[in-house]
Length: 188
Image 1: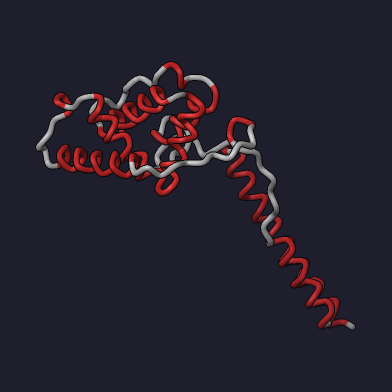
Image 2 (image 1 turned 90 degrees about the vertical axis):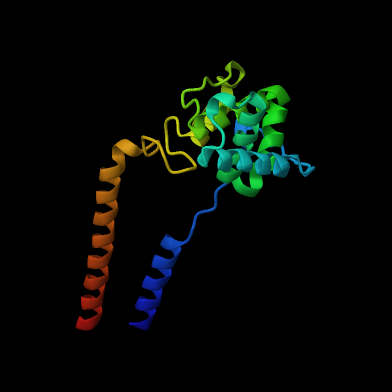
């Protein structure tokens, strides 16, 4: 009986253990992004925070903000969304698209997320490849964004209810199997 119980615990623990995943980097590459922390990102985030607080306090109005101000706001919002990885993400975007496009992305994020221009156009050089998906993910345009807003629930959303019910059926089957095994042991 103890052997069967140990075997059952072992099977359940193996099934519950996380799987090993081998994933590739973004854009199909295996490059490592190395960011140099020169303080530029922290300064931009602090400047953006000051603009945001002034906007919230109605000390500033959207019409008086320049693209440089929106750039700082965008850096602030991106820092909120990405945390400590903001510097590395900036480096990766600069490598992929160039510094001008990276600046345009910050400006667009600043305009959209501040509410000043919620339909600000995404720069054309970000429309292809992986940046469109990254931009949509950060600003909430499409799927589930980093900030928790968005529409659909991911790639398998059509099967959400089905997969939940299937998981429930599997769980019930495992419980019934355990009960049946327990009764078989008690008979012997």
